[in-house]
Length: 425
Image (cartoon, rainbow, N blue to C red; front, side, top):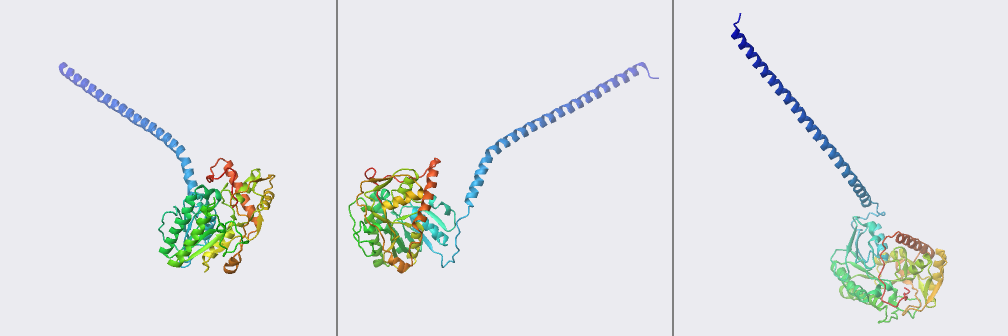
């Protein structure tokens, strides 16, 4: 048997061991609990972070979704279908410059040339032209739009030049007569210089205004005209007469191929609202229930052609061998009063006809002799007057709706003439 002291020693050692084991167990338990707490804290933080990220992502998604919608709409607009375009081989496809190509006539000419398969460059300073007239071609590989004033030189490579740049309605060209003169003189010189450098053919869009207030009726191409060189319309009339002179000087001296179209009154969609011309004046007044304003007795005559007929004539003249001036107009003559009554009936308007004092230098008669165009170009107007007027009325009705929806429609600046004195053109 163990002695008493030995038993006490064994007992003490056992107690120490037990305490040590308990201490180790306690430490292990604390470590385990601490680890669980850390894990729980990590999980909790992770959960909070994930929730925060989800909320942020949800908020970002709310903000971004409308932007995605806009991007999708833009992509749709960029992938819009263009009007049908012919395919032309390299030898048949021409590089064509249209100055004033965002204007009324220029944009319709651009449409035809593009659909015929040519490469078209439109140059316009947007004084009266509008981008919306040609926006349906923006992005097409055959189309280019340049914001440029022809009073400054232009250096590009082209095969043909349709020189249409110039204000054409009296309020526009009389607003800044010096600018009108510069466009028709310096601008024409620049385009003739370009034609000379690159060997291009140039077509000048001249006007029936070169005949002034004619003493010969109807007007033939060999009539020299009756123009007031210092009157309110002279900046345009004489500007175009000088432009014609320049074309034939370049043809005789430099061998430049030129074509000259003397354009008579033309109407159709894309005309400026409130531009002071007979058609736009009467249609807008009839649609808005305002009196149709006739200057003088209304016995003055005009001959109106639809814009598609004019465009076909311009293209036929450009591609012909006729270098002398050619009248492009409708020989169907109407008085201003007859025309006002016709538009009233087509619109179904109850507007009255109001007579105002006669405008200065307003031509009394205007009717083209188009025998030359018929014989040498095989061209004559084919769109009936009422059919063309109905299309123009539909266009102006849409423009008025557009304006009524508080959307901006550019308007030409008023002419510097006596109040209420719009010219018939």
